Length: 204
Image (cartoon, rainbow, N blue to C red; front, top):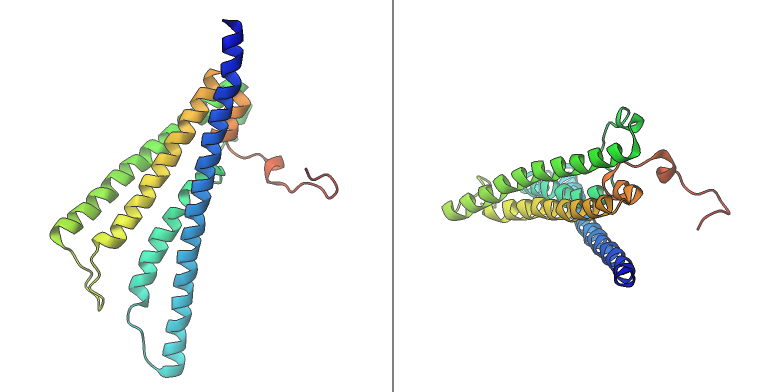
């Protein structure tokens, strides 16, 4: 029995690490996609400025397209921020607590954040669905079907919720195994040393 348990622990740990790595890879890809969308919006703004200043006209679509780009592009980066623990959290009080209690609070904070965004994602999907059923269109020159940008925006929220759920499972399993440091590495706040670059000559 002891040998079987010992054999399973490394495999379980490796599977969690693999799941975390795959989640981080997907989140990074979404963040890059979101960044490209925002860069494209910036390029469109440059074109709009050129047309207005040099040609004395206007594209007439920049405001609309850039608003979609900002909403979708920024939301696509949310999962990456969650994986990298880049969201702002005030932990001045919790740092004074015992390590195990800190890990539990980190887990609850991640669950609360994921649950809140699950509610947001629900209404985002509902908004896109209603727009699709009603064939709602923007009151602009493009007459854009609102279901299209809203669906992409809702999908980004769903991706955030999925990311949060995966991280929540990994953190809970690690905490259940007594790996408080591993739980905090997934659900906790970043510390000062983590954000500081490694000194020259000591990089690993």
